[in-house]
Figure 1 (spheres, rainbow, N blue to C red):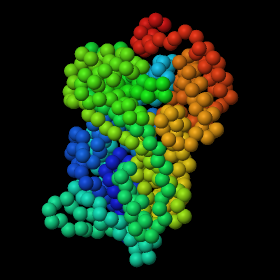
Figure 2: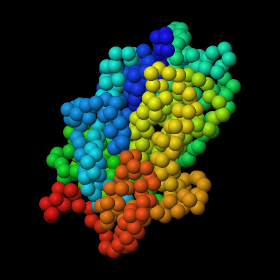
Figure 3: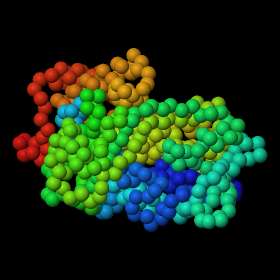
Figure 4: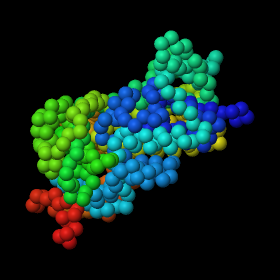
Length: 459
C-alpha cells in the first residue's frame, strides 16, 4: 500500500491481542478499540466476565503464543506461575476413572485469567505500531458508497456528551466475542444472514480461589475429573500464580454448582476425584464462590456466505464460541491469528471468504467436530445423532476406557484434545488395536488414582 496503512481491531480480548500481534507485521498502524480500560489493568475486567474463572490454554495454544511472543512462557514463570507436563503432571479422570499418564514434553502454565491476559497485552502494547483506544463504544461499521467495502468504524468515547468519531481503516477485525454485532451489521447493509449453529448445553460453573498449607497435589499440577453422561459434573483444580489454588466446578444440563460455601463443597464432594474435596474443605478461601452460566455453543458459518464485504475479518469467539469446559477458545484464537497472518502478509488486502474457508477447515472444524461428539453424548443436549456421530461416540468411549490401562492411549488422546494432532490420529491401525485391547482389559479390577510422586517412589 502506498499510503500509511491501518488495521483496526475491535475488542482487546485474547483473540484481539493475537490478531493485533500478526497485523502489526503487515500494517503501518494497528489500533485496538475496547470499552474497557486495558493498559495497566491487573485484575478482572467487566468486558471479560470469565476473567474470574479458570483460564486454561491447550498445548498447541501455548506453543503458538510462544512463537508470537518469544520468551512469554519464561515471563509467566517469573511472575510465579507454576509449570508441569500437560499430561504427566495432571490427574485426568475419564468416565469417573483416573487414566494412566506419562510426560509428553509439553508444559502447561496455569496462570489466572487476568495474569495471562496482562502478559499478552503488555507484549502487544510493546509493539511500536500498536495503539490502544480505550473506553470507546463501538457504534457501527463505516462502508463505502456501494457497500462493498468496510472503510472504518464509528466509535464514541464513554464520557458524557462525547461525539461519535470515525476511525478510518484499510482492515477492520471483529474480535468482540460471542456477542459480536457483525451479523446484524451485515444484514443492515444488505448482506445475507450468516448461518448459525447453536447447541444448548446448559453449562454452569462456579470458581473459588484458596490458600492451602503444604502441597495437596503431591507434586502434581492439577486434578481434572471430566464430566460424563453418568455424572454430568466435572472440575478443574489447579495450582496457579502466586501460590494460589484455583477450583472451577461445573455441571451440564442445568445441574449447576450452588454458590453458598456449604453447598459448593457438597457439590465438589460428589465429583469422581475425592482428592479435590479433601484439599479444599480445610483451605482458606480468598474470595466467595463466583458463578458463570453458558447456555449454548455458537458457530457462525461465515465460510458459507455467498458474498462478504472487503476490508472486514472476524476472529475468536465472534466466529465460534466453544463449550468452555473443553478450554479451546484461546488456542483457537491463537491458531486463527496464524491463519490471518497468511492472508494479510505485506499489507495486501485479504480476501475475506478465502480467509473464512481456510479458518474453518484448518482451525475450527477439528475441535468443533470432536467436541460435538462429546456434547451429544449427554442425553439432554439437543442435536442430530447421526450414525457417524453414534459410531464416533462408541469409539471415544473405548478410547477413554483404554486410557485407564494404556498410557500410550492416554497420550494419543490428550495430544488430540490438546490440538497437537488432528482427531484422525486416534484412528491409525496401531492405535485402534491398542484401544480395543485396552478397553477389553478395562473390564477387570477397578483402577486406583496414584499421585505421580507416589508412583515414582514405588517404581
